[in-house]
Image (cartoon, rainbow, N blue to C red):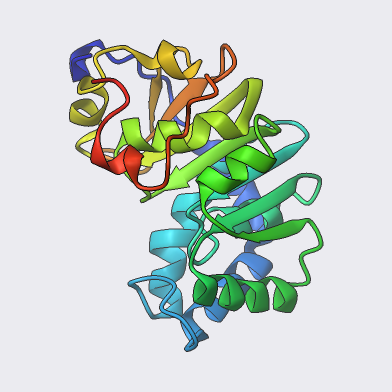
Length: 234
């Protein structure tokens, strides 16, 4: 699929502003905790202000896209981005932070406890393992800076219930990433993706959103490491 053929909706826009006003204190505290974490390198950015501007605000843009109820999973959560932001702004949702690096999981666990978040579950395992034990149980699964769009879809689709949604944070190469799959999303039980730009005018940031239209075949995800070695669409 060429970039010109991608359907683009309006971004969440002004819906983010009241969210930031309402939850600014815990969101900023989260940035402070990330900045002060010395037990694990959770982001490439260190200062609180920069963390807040580059990461927390970026993740805040996805909050209007969350489901009205249920459980959501942040795959490859790292420092809890976007999952911790979701948990702060949507205390009514159950938010699962999924990451396979034990050091990061321990550090994020400390942050979650410091913030007093009671709607967060930490899973320190690979998404392939989670897909076996909690297959198609989530209303939404998301990935931020995890992998190219096609690879991310293989990790996310087995986690999402039919009727749910997949979400990937993307940038200027989104057309290239989606184009390499050549419209074969149905193999994973997915509808064609929608690209939703966000951020200031001229920004290349966007969300890629897939609706889960049918059950994901049992063969996905493949064994550990296979998704990044050979595309499922080939």
